[in-house]
Image 1 (tube, rainbow, N blue to C red):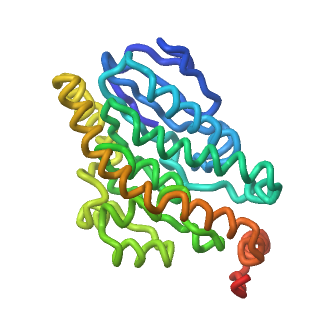
Image 2 (cartoon, rainbow, N blue to C red):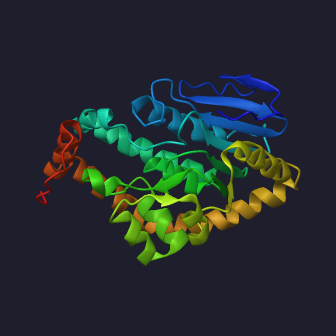
Length: 278
């Protein structure tokens, strides 16, 4: 947990009624600090509750005009360790799968449409959708103890929730495939070398560094910052428009594959999976 120091208001419901079960919100002057804080997961694994809150939070933030900058971070041991394996069996139901597909699309596009700058403070593992959310923020700061990666393929899934879009934009297609096809995690030092994070800090200094950076942005000319962000994101959205729906559709297909079921069974039985390509 961070000690933010400057935070003056702390609650699950602040100015605009932004209240969630798994995301804690705090105010630091003109900066909103949002902390992924799943009460049932020490690593903020994404299940139905957190996925629903992420959908609501980014939708709310897109229309909220009370803040000039946002810090997004995680509580406990992780930013977000990605999908909760216990949630995956629920997604075998076609109705649930379609709801998650639609919500996943809204999460990405709403995040890209938020006008105020967002600083991601990656305090611990950011994996899968957790990595995508961090990398879609405007400035990424990482703890030197954190790692980032997208291990969808390790459970027989396509990284369709944004990973196949943002990774190639940041590090190029070849390196993106190197990490997306293996699911290998990347240390903070290597992430900095590759350009996945702007700064790396000691764990005890990350919170203050993120808040200081967000405060600097909040003190800038609001219209200039917002419009500059929108201009850059218009290019990002063009790239996503050509590939996101395809990747998300492929992920939905792999959710119903035998390989995905085998991956979940292997995790439960603590053995290596035996993938058969079907």
